[in-house]
Length: 334
Ligand SMILES: C[S@@+](CC[C@H](N)C(=O)[O-])C[C@H]1O[C@@H](n2cnc3c(N)ncnc32)[C@H](O)[C@@H]1O
Image: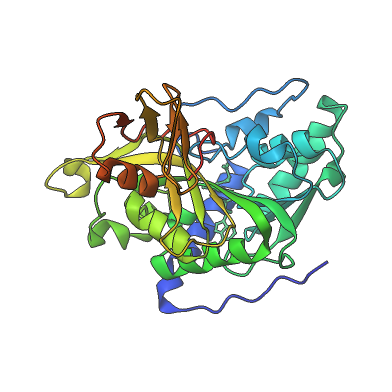
């Protein structure tokens, strides 16, 4: 087993002490308002989730999806919390060491360990060896290069400052095998969060003031080397209200679920799927743009934003390009 890798302290990661203290408390005493949304966690056949895990659901969406997990053999979950999503992933993988779950807070690792042991008698298919808990930091993952099929984080990376986010994304890229998937659930901001809130370590630790606008978040994921991105969901998360937070206007935070694939970034930029669709209405059975996109007449095809823009620029009456739904389900080609 790898030793935890040291993380150098810099003035900009002072907030991490506040994060550590908050999640040590949240490990021992459930905090019902922390991070969560009103969306209930997945129910899976034969999966019984211990109550203590449900009470410590500190995510803001889900990173567990059969599209990613059906063929995976080794997954990484960073920021384990009470272990809910690590257990859900283990439901798909069902093998010793199938899920490696990392956290830097000892109390959280202890709680997750206890709750995973509690899950054993509730779930005849489950063995505690299916989830390997490792002490470590998202900025220096204790995981070997290129060994992971699916790497997930839920409601952690938004806490990081920009330079730390870039390091965390590059660590996820390092540990994924080629073609591997980074699955994120995280808050984003509908406009830039002002410094007086972003610099508040407690608000940041509570996942309320570190969120970036979606386009900046996407750019940073692409800069880390991910060539294909799919946005699966985007919905309201919190409002930073103007009275309590000293703002001119309320500021809506949204929560996104996103998959980034470790493909090479194409020379003309990453393929970012936001739910846009191209529909060919012409007399011909097929429209072929000569760049790998074949549109069957009347059949909507999911296209990335780059392709949507290129097709729209053709100015053809027989091509309809729909807007972003933010619910891309992996059915298109770029
Ligand atoms: C908001 S909670 C999310 C927990 C879990 N993902 C969930 O959905 O319930 C953030 C988690 O990340 C852990 N954490 C905080 N900073 C971390 C870091 N730098 N590296 C690894 N884990 C960290 C916390 O201890 C906590 O378990």
